[in-house]
Every structure is written in C-alpha cells, then in structure tokens.
Image (tube, rainbow, N blue to C red):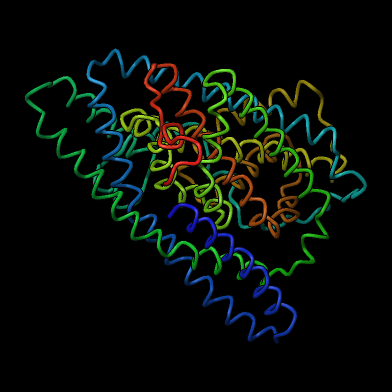
Length: 419
C-alpha cells in the first residue's frame, strides 16, 4: 500500500507539471485563470481536511505520549534532550544557510537600487515580536486554540494535561485509555483523508505551473539551484548526525519517510505530512509515546528547512542590493533568527514574515521580498520536505537516547520474504 501511495503521488506530480505547462502555454489568460481557481480549490479542500485533523491529532498524541511516560522526571529528561537537539539543529541550519549563500553568491550581479518609494510587499514585518510570541504560547481558551488550529497553544495545554494525568496515576487510567483510543480514531480518519492526497498533489503542482509557467524556474535558476544544493547539504548533515546516534538504520528511516517527504514536497506543506510522518515513525520503531511527544514539538520549534531559507533568502536580498554585512552583523542575524524562527508555526506565511522583520532590523530594503515572492511556492516545496526529515530524525534520536527504539517491520522481515 505504501509503495502504491508513493507511485500515485509521483504520478500526480508529473501529471501536474504537464497539465500546468499546457494550461500556461496553450490557453488564453482568462481561461487559464479559471482553471487555476478550480485547481486551487481542490488543493485548499485537501489542506482544510488536514487542518481539520491536526489539532485533535496533536492533542491526543501529546497527551497520550506524556501520560505513558509516567513520572515527570521522564518527561523533563526527554524534553530537555529534545529541546537541546532542536537548538543544535537550528544553529546548524541557520549557519549552513549563511555559509552556502556566501559561497554561492546567487545575488551577485543584480545591483538593484534602493529607490525612494516604499513598496508594499503584503508582508507585515511588525507581525512578529518576542513579546507577542511569548504571549502567544499561552492560550486564553483551549477550545479557541483548537478552533483556530493554534499548534503552539495546543502543545502547551497538551503538555500540561498529559503531565497532570501522569501525576494522577491509576486514578486517571481511564483518561489514558481514552487518549489512546482518540489517537487510533484520528489515525483512521487520517487514512481516509490521505486517499485524496494524489489528487491534491496534482492540483497543487498544476496550479503553480499554470500560473507562473516553467520559465520562472529558469529566470531564478541560480537562486533556486543554490537553495536546493544547500538543502541537500543539510540533509547530508542530518543523516550523518543520525548515523552517529542510531547507526545504519538512519538509511531505513529515510526510506520509510518516502511518502510524507513526497507529500510535503508536492503540497508545499509540512502540516499536510504530519499525520503520515507520525504513522511512518511508528512503523520504523519509534514508540508512539515518544513520537507523539517529539513530533508536535518539532513542528512548533524545529523547522530546519524553513530556518535555512530565512538565512539564505535574507542574505540573497542583501547581495542583490549590494548591502555588505560584517561577520558580527551576520552573527547577530543568526541569533535573531534563532529566536524569531521559533514562532513560525503560529504565523501565516511565516518564513516571509520572519525575513521581512530581519530585513527591517538590518536596514536591507524590504522591497527585496518581491524577488522571492514569485518563486516562494517552489522553494516552500523543498523546505517543507526538509522539515519532515529534520523532525523525524529528531524523534528517532530521542527514542534511541531513551533506549526505546524498536525494530520496525523492515528490520524484522528476512531478505526476500513475502510481504
């Protein structure tokens, strides 16, 4: 079933490119726009279905995961190790982005002029402040957080709920069972929703290509190629780190993640791949109590691909405007992004908001955002897939540190055995 799902996703991807190109080149603009609207409707329907199940899935998996850990010391121990990994991964992602954009210099030769007129990019740099982020962590109402799909707030409430249930012990046994049953129900619903994934992938890719055409990839070829080369380097570092901790099974993990990686890449949404990633981690051998604890935290605090993009895109814009930043300024930028990127999960068009805030902080023309707005969808595909890999590796590492990493079906099946 997993192989068939991957084939259907790839088929949707290929057909989407072909149909999108045909619409873009063969149809009148008005007709193309009408088709794009229909395709976007299909994609939006799928993403809404995903958003519909994310909040209850995150709540149930986190509550069940924390409750099964038992003592608060276990939660604290795993939590501290996980957060330490997240910050280390964030530092590597941000630093690697700065190194790669400096080496590749994709903005060289553009020599854009600052100009006097302000340009409205549609992105508010003031939408993200440290104060707002801290306050945003605490929900004023759990039900409002669920209704608004506020993942950060749901994570905070779920951690408190799971800890309280664990502290009650036997008296809350029924609640633990209820949380486990809710997880099973949500995973079953996820299975139903995922049946529509290949159609959503086709629609998302076709709409993007039909609207922008393939020529945009050639126009920004140097920037896109440089960014994807940087993501490739980050994947390599994540695999090496995983190899050092969990051994050769890291390659089996990447293979197991084939479906969620393709789904995240095709839909340009890390959120869309969350349920499938959780399922595949369990198949790999990460206990649900750990996967259900680490993965939601990762989706809130460990978006490796998005963080690299923030550094890469910000310095690319600086290069385009011939703005030279000193090593000290770049170091300050990395520290600033380390903090502001932790709030990305709760902000619409989060990466662009973070970039806008960073540009304003260093006096780099905010109009530079217009350089990347047109290709953001293509870049989002790569960073969403990278977010999946980064969070899955973090969950597997956490399980290994707890000596809880089990042998998955792929490890148990003898070579050549019937499935």
